[in-house]
Structure formats: C-alpha cells, structure tokens
Length: 179
Figure (cartoon, rainbow, N blue to C red):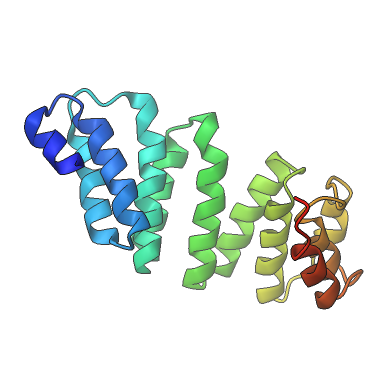
C-alpha cells in the first residue's frame, strides 16, 4: 500500500518513506528500511524537526544488521541535531550499539550521560551497570538507585543487580499479571 501510494501521489513522500521504513524494520528487512530512510532524507520538503527521529530509526536498522559503526554514525547525527526530544534517546541507543560492538568505554560514557541527565530512568542505570561490569569497573548502581522507584518495574532488576533479590524472585514478579 505504501508503494502504491508513492506511485499515485508522491507529495507525502517523506511520511510514506518513513512509515514504510519502519514497517520494513519490523519485518526484519533492515536493508530496505535503511533505503527508505535515506530516501526520506532526500525529500526536499523534509522538516528539520523530523531528521533526528529519522537518524535514530536508520541507526536502529543498521544495528539490526549488526553494522554498529554505521549505527553509531547515524546516532551521532541525531545527537548533533541538538533536538532535546531525541538527544537522550540517541545517546542511549548509541550506548547499546557501542556495547554490542565491544566498545565498553564508549558504551559506559553514553549510558552514564543519559543516567545523569535523567536519573529517574531505571533502564539507564541498569545499562550503565552492565557496561561497568563488562569493563570490570566498579558499579554505580547503588548510588543510582537512590533516585529510582524500586517498587515498580524494572526496579526488581535493579535490586537483583545490587544483590538484594534473587533471579527466582524477579521471575515471579515478571510473571505477575498485574501491570
């Protein structure tokens, strides 16, 4: 339908390329996703505010392929945009790409940046701890936990990582049907 729409009316090309790229990514077709994101960048009427999100989407597709250097490059573009709505997320996903590529110092720096910028997000603290542990660096999770609500998910994982819970306790909480 997206392809037919582009043939029938190329005017909304940016939105269609972006949406079709997301669909390709969800179908594990990262190559076509990247191609559509690149086409979306070429649309003359692309709004500057749409670019950071598109850089992140493209970075995610590169990461999906295991091309972490290309993913990091795309995330760098999102960060360079300075768009506060996307910069934090770009640092976070760039950190994951660094971690998967084995660039532990860079991963740790990215995770600590987002964790310092928003110390209430448990996921940031967890990923920073994972990077620290892989680097044999001291954990900062105990200090970070002071800003986290450990009663709600993923608080049980934080408690597990701090040695205050067991895997079976965390799994039992994960199986709880009450969101």
